[in-house]
Amino acid sequence: MRDPVTFSNNGQKIIGVLHRPDNPPHINSKPGGETGSKANGKAPGVILFHGFTGQKVEAHRIFVKLAEMLASRGIWTLRFDFRGSGDSEGDFSEMTLEGEISDAIVALDFMCSQDGIDHGRVGILGLSMGGAVAACVGGRDPRVKSMVLWSAVADFARVPLFADNVKLLHELNGNGQLNEVDLEGDVVGRNFLLGLAEAKPYEEIKKVKAPVLIVHGDADATVPVSHSQIFERAIREVGGKVEVYILPGADHTYNSREWESRVLEKSVEWFEKTLLYLEGSQPVQGRGDL
Image 1: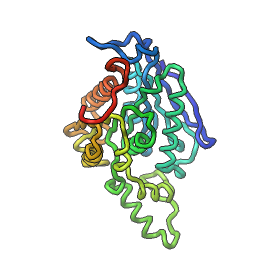
Image 2: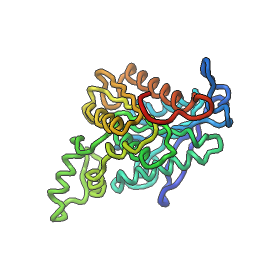
Image 3: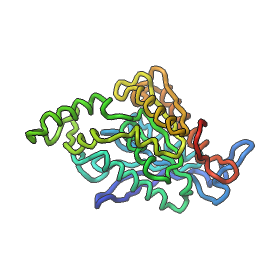
C-alpha cells in the first residue's frame, strides 16, 4: 500500500510517497528465528535519497521497485524529491548539498513520526550524490541504524562533471564573473559548487555507527568504482561494519534487468538482516565485519 505524503523544510513543500508493509509486522518470520517487530508491534523503515537531477522514481523505476519489495517484506519505505527536484517546491538552481542533507534529516523526522515505525530501526539508502547525502546524514544523525550506498560519491573532486566546474568557479570567482553553471541542461548556482568543494563524505562516513553496504558497478563511468574503495577504507579505518558488493560490467544506475535484479535483492536482504530480523529483541549494531 502506498500513500502520497507532504512535509516541509524552510517553508517549502517536499513531496514523497510512503510505502506501507503489506502484512502486519508479526506475520514476517525467518526460519529458526523471529522478527524484531514482534517485541513492540512496530516495523522498521527505510528512506531513499535520489541522485543529482534525479527524483523519487529514479532510472527504470528502480526506487519504486525497491520500495515495493521492502514493503512486501514488512519494511516501511519513504521515497521523496529533494527541494528543487521532481514534484517538490524550490528552484533547482538554489539547491546545495547541505540543503539536501537538511531535507534528508527532515524526511527522517517525518518517518519517525509515523505511528507504525520502530524509531530504533530506521535505515537509509542513497544513489550517486544521494549516497553522499546518506554518508553525511548517517554520520550526523544517530537514528540511522543501517545504510546502503549505490554508486555513491565519496569525493566530489574525483567526479569530473563536478570537479571541472568547481575549478572554473575558482578561476572566475575573483572577478565575480560566475554565478551559475549549466551542467548538461541543469543550471546550478555558485553556492552548490562551493559546497561541493568543501564537502567530504569520505570523512563524514567515519562517524557512522550503523552497518554499511556499498554497491557499485565496476564499469561506472559517472562515479568510478574507486569511490566505493575510498568509502570502504574510511569505514575500516575506524573499525566500522562494512560489506562491499561490486557488479562486474555494471554502469552507474544498473541499466539491465540482471544488474537491477541483483542490486535490489542484495539491498533488500541487507535491510532484512540489519533491521528486520534481530537476535532477541535488539537491533543489529556495533562494529566489526558482518
